[in-house]
Image (cartoon, rainbow, N blue to C red; front, side, top):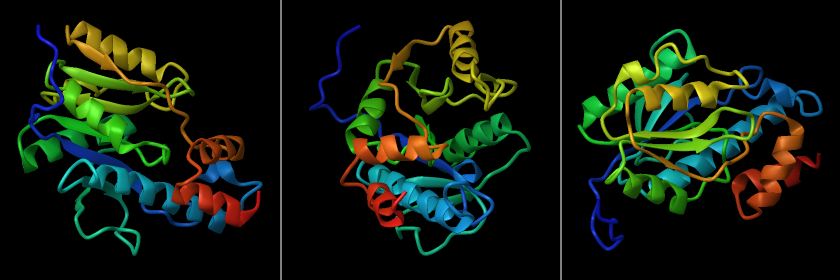
Length: 218
């Protein structure tokens, strides 16, 4: 198989962000303490804004699979779809399916927990799906921060145990059993704890997330 030349134009994938509305007490609860619920929500909003900004730099119309209602943080170019399903595996599978129904083609999905994500990483995922069936970005906590599928299929996600130290291993096993070729991206840290927030802010000093961490002074 030949190597894709980045001067070629790939079939534009959907860039999907799956997220919760950043409301106090409902997001980033592991940040409290030391952050208050309101501060944790402010950090979640900053992370979501950064993620949306990166997605908008790559896709003309990013898709937000949202649990909750849109707010002032939502850019005008983003398509909002509601999350469906009970467990996270069902919600992820539904986000892939619904984005694919909007416009058939590859789908790259990230969460709102990696505000350090760059347009370059998302573009790498998009180009990878020209030659691979899937693209996978591991998270430091054992999960994954990005999953891309050239041909979305709910069976690739349903039943995978989520929010588990070996979520990533189980997800990769599922892709392997389906005999899919997988392109691997660098590991990123999900923001779950105050320690995570400090490390991620230092890694992305120009981000809105870093500015919010600095403003809150923790």
